[in-house]
Image (tube, rainbow, N blue to C red; front, side):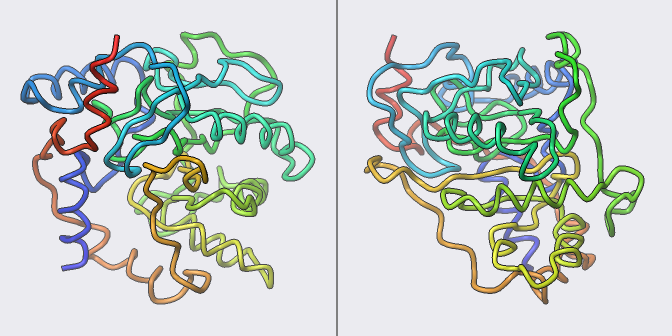
Amino acid sequence: MRAALFCAWLLVLGVGCGNALAQDTAAAEAVHRAAVFARLPPDAAQRVFGGKLTPVGGLPQAIGAYERGCLEGAVALPADGPNWQVMRPSRNRAWGHPVLISFLERLARQLPAEAGWPGLLVGDIAQPRGGPMLTGHGSHQIGLDADIWLAPMPSRRLSPAERDEISAINVVAAGGLEIDRSTWIPAHGLLLKAFAHEPTVQRIFVNAAIKRELCHEAGSDRGWLSKVRAWWGHNDHFHVRLSCPGDDPQCRNQAPPPPGDGCGKELDWWFTPEARHPPQGPAKPLLLADLPAACAKLVAAP
């Protein structure tokens, strides 16, 4: 029953219950986009927002909820920085709220010293005007979510073609019950801990096997684990979510994580047959009318 309820919610958001394929190569992404376009009604929010190639200027505003909203005044994370590289550039999804972009730039510079992590490979953030994406996500709509690959940044700059085609590193063993000891390294735990210790981080979504490994490795320092939540997929990347900026009145925060480290019965459920084999079904797309009224004005702007 719990899996069915979770999946019903996901289907409303326009995603399935398995791996969201958020790190698809450019060729696979093109196939999925064509399939999505073929079934979308004309007023589907995915179609409308997915076709916008540029942001709308003005005061930055995260509008609505993470899974039902849009973004005004977006800025792009530069393709290259001192300690980051943007992946899948052909998707044009490196846009975010300035608060998130500044956060990623700052933390990327700190990670070599704090976590022994050479730099970030940054996946999807948001579309130029936020809103529902054509493929891969149910959230990432208000510019406060970002995917971070679990592969460390290489010592050289990847070409645009490499960034579109190179595969992310899977750190979960076949079967999904534990991490893959051949790809998981201690620095992965330090990386996630560094993100979780940031006050503005609201949630970090990881594969359940990764969460269980973090629970084993954490020792007595466990407060940060409450932010790290198990979710389907996320075996080759993690999803970081920031809280709403205090001066964005239309932004809707997610409820705080439950108390505790999330390492007990709550985590055990993710390894039950119900969680590991959730029901699948056709996705119901969000319509433009399902989003906050301000989003219709935003997407209509030149």
